[in-house]
Amino acid sequence: MKNLLMYLCWSIVLIVLLYSGGLVQINLLEHQNTTHNILPNFTFSFLFPLFLGMSIRFSYFFSDRERDKKWTFNWKKLLGIGFPLLLIAMGPFIFFIIGLPTIDSLLPGFYLSNFSSESIAGLICGFVVVDSLRESK
Image (cartoon, helix red, strand yellow):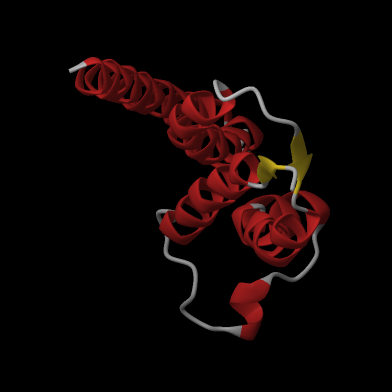
């Protein structure tokens, strides 16, 4: 029963986080349309999925941490899975801000106009960053 209540509370926190993120994104789109400044919208579309992925994994991290073990960082997982996903999530930054060609020039049709591939990559990358913390053997 304790776990059910914890999961229910964590689900409510995630729903509130998603709702508030949607409101912030709507406000940033209105700001972008009036000022023609795309940087705040790109920053939010990059950072919010990372934060959301970390938030999803934190529920497991806190329950694992209660065991009072020593923790290490899995660099192989972070560099092998997290770094490529971070580059995909940073696609709009890399292309528009820095001016470098991105993966969409290599794979036509990879990016959609609503940044869904970047959001999914950022969500998984945030999950992998927290998941890279592990118990030492």
